[in-house]
Amino acid sequence: MPDRRSLLGLVLAAALALSGPCPATAQAAPAERIPVVASFSILGDFVRQVGGDRVQAVSLVGPNGDAHVFQPSPADARTLAGARLVVVNGLGLEGWIDRLVRASGSRAPVVTASAGVKPLESREGGEAPHADPHAWQDVANAKAYVAAIRDGLSAADPAGKAVYDERAAAYLAQLDALDAEVRAAIARIPADRRRIVTTHDAFGYFGRAYGVAFIAPQGVSTEAEASARDVARIIRQIRAEKVPAVFLENVSDPRLMQRITRETGAKVGGKLYSDALSEQGGPAGTYIEMIRNNIRELSAALSS
Image (cartoon, rainbow, N blue to C red; front, side, top):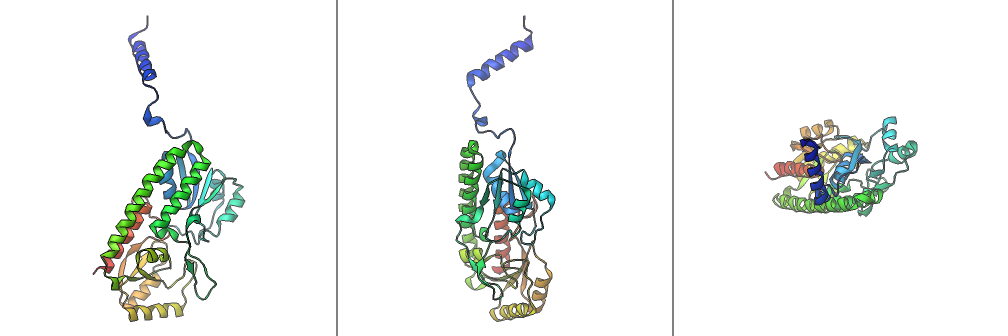
């Protein structure tokens, strides 16, 4: 005769059989999460927002890292070799990525997140025009990134398509709200004060979308060094136009901006996040937190 614990087990098993599969597990994560490699931290956050528990997202260039000057290691090649999907920005941001993919032997499909974006043209120091890679600074472009990542995940993991569609839709709604939040904040800044200096030219898309003029002594890439002539020109422009504030970025050397503030008296704003997120728990641990941080800093410096 079965003992009391055996009877209890039989009752529980019968109850589970009658109730059918639990709805909460109908879209459960696979036994092993899908390995996805993103080129840098902002893309890594997009992958996590869309993929949720179905993916294991790794960023080659981590928090506060600079994808412009990143030097891949053999460990990065090994990480890439194990990926089921690779997500890159494109537009010339990761000049090292093609070589790294070849060196790794990876056969994973590569999603270019910026594929649906109309790039801005940039011309630095008289060079031929080239694409500005910082398209994520316009929230509308971030939505295009998310759609590309959703489609790439669905192709790499068809069983998860419903999850990716649902999570992407929810995140896109958050980005719509964020875009409205940015526009409302900028509208509260007097039009004649919407001019700032930043360390390098990473905010062209933000400026075009939201009506803020960004002046940078360096070009699109942090690899470019500002010449003495460039610095003198910026100092003259700040004085002539009465630019109210200068901002440092989390991926740039602060010494240049410190010199400019000394010579112009412009107000030093807080730190802006341009090419990378902060560490988790920091002021810009996710893309949405990054945009909100930047808006807070801009508003504080320009509104008074």
